[in-house]
Length: 141
Image 1 (cartoon, one colour):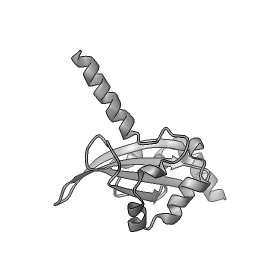
Image 2 (cartoon, one colour):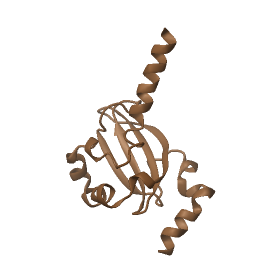
Image 3 (cartoon, one colour):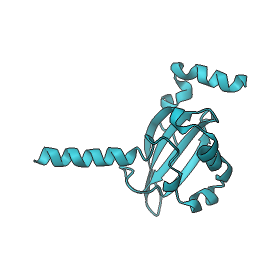
Image 4 (cartoon, one colour):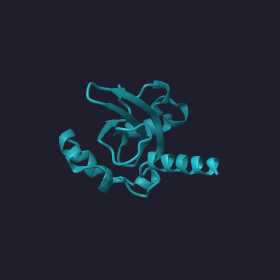
């Protein structure tokens, strides 16, 4: 009985942590529009929702990290994707370690740039040999 309850709880956490990453389109409706405006992400957000083929992306979650501030703790879930429109790093910020609920903040970075929000630099997709051909395709044009 306890095992099945724990398994159910773990499944719930994992499904919520993947936060629309298994969806066929970018999960725009789950990110508060005030976050997009505050971060100045309107153009990039529009690209993800209207121009990118989300179902054809390559990549996934690369890191989870903890950020302690004076007010509260945050947990960042970093995803990197190679897509037909651009190569991006998406960082979803939550106020709980499981990434349950709606993000309290959201960031978009260029996948090919270094990020202070990826703790284990070896996890960057750009540093993995099997993805090098995708980087070259972008720079070739």
